Image (cartoon, rainbow, N blue to C red; front, side, top):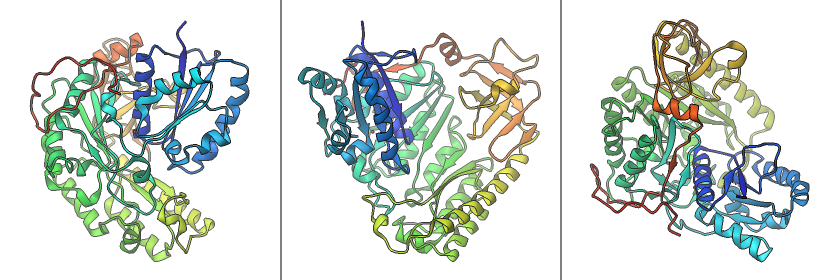
Length: 494
């Protein structure tokens, strides 16, 4: 019988997409995804994060829970990869000697070989590379969604923000060639996917490796030429590198969604300097003004840190001022906590926890007030919703379904009305009218105006998830790629 696997993912979208690659690798190696929760998988893979608070405690706690399980199931293997593995390296096996494999962010393609080697040698295998071995796009991927897919355009980061450990774990930025990206986008669309999100630590510095500072805007426009691709999103841009050609590409390319997630981190120019963020609040707000001038309907979201070392009440007021001016549709707000290995962790003037908490509550209250006001303005508007799976925690009791509008807002809707063309499924597209706006979502309780059944919905109903083979590196050009031999489907060795 085939050995079964389970992947447990923590952290950002990059980690989620890396886990799709890990699943593709394992399935190409003959493993089968574990579906029965009552049976213990033969292989459990932890894809870890080193950015989130208490990430290490969470990992070692979960590893501790698995120790007796593994003892009762001879032959079971445990693997740990991702950012925390890159950081802790051999420390993981020292603290949890029942772990079989440890691999880093630069060599996820080695997992099947390391598992086999650990089984053959009956000892733990630790392999951490200091630089990228192969770009993850050359690896196969088992996608989680039938209707939306992640596509990495770069990995790593060339910035040096004092609060962030990502550059030391993911390395310097490595860009994929545009032909490579577009080949993967087309492969997903051929599998029925309607929406792609272009991923990078700093998407609008894309092109630095092959000398084209306008490459990202060109890539957005090229995605507009992909037949069947209905929605394009991207995350995350850096204000320092944001250029007007990207705004024009967003506004002029019909399938690029009018949604922008652009991290602010702080509204204090003094703190931005200490954070090494290389832009100031006026620069940030000027980008937002230009985006809204080109796309008045754009939904803009952000990340904000409260309580960075040395933050004064005046600094915090600067953040509140920018939030009021920017009028974000939503914000991911974080209380600063030390991350070992970052410059900020050793800075003086760490802000007391109670002060951070009080400021955090004030920020959340202000942002909720703004978001609620913006969402109330949408009552009576028609929205197009790509129906999603697992977005609405209360859908069963409210008899609603949920999905995302084109601007990224979460919409809970009632699947009723004469426009229904059968059962509404995740992956289908509906149009409906907003009847209520809450701070974090919209509600549409009236009859649907339209319901379009899609191939993505068919795939969801059939339990089919896209499987994409590794995409070989292409040339640094846009437009139709040159004819190439069919890919072999394996890895050539986030």
